[in-house]
Image (cartoon, rainbow, N blue to C red; front, side, top):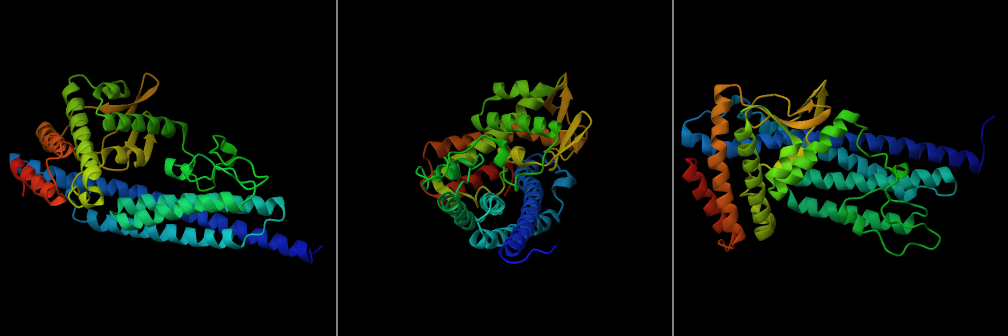
Length: 371
């Protein structure tokens, strides 16, 4: 029997909205995957530029994997395609949220899901813009994501938010429309948005937790906090220490410069990888008791970044194998010391303008032997 009248219209509308919602979620997932790939490529570009100066000081040749001339082109292509995917998803979701019927429970559920999906798609696009170095666009997208949270809370009866990034969580109005439940961030998984990342395996989740904890230690400069997270091969204690100190020094300089000069510091910091971001966003591939990251390692060797040891996943630190990789690792102490000294000067207010900072950066590279 064919449905006729309002019921038929309602069912057709919901079906169309569900279809559009699914399509938008697929586009968001595609944007996320491309952004993660781009993060790995950008890490290679940053590391190439950072090691170039130190390499010229010692006559070492940077591993060929790090100087691939196609990486820059690939990075731009991934970021551009990711941005297009996010744009398509957001436009589709906007059409749903602006015209969705909310009479039946199914209609309401669809509309709520679309609002949540729209918030996360916009937030993820903000991170993609930051990765592309487009601070103005990132600011615009961030503001839009915040406005979506406010609009969802005010216009969508019965909406309950999943855990949101700090700034977005703060945008949830304290006073909700009459009769609506609390919009405090929920810790319940039942309302997790359909744009959440694809469900990871238990091993991938465990590896990610270790990477995030290590990233936290790098940001704090706490080497001892990082040590229990690592499987350090015999005789490689210095490798672990040098690697950690270089990452911590680079991160410290980046944070100090941005705190002092804001977005104007970004062009000067172009050659300095955001190691904590790399660890938090890297694609993880688990093969048995080994886990590989999407981006290439600092030494140019594609070796497992984490291994399962004693039933627990840990960051792996083993000595480099190739002669060139060994020479690259030898640069780390000198490079970390130079970065740390520059960070101290920035924190102390030694440079009044970003141009002063840029000049100091240039002098540091010349001191290492680079231009």
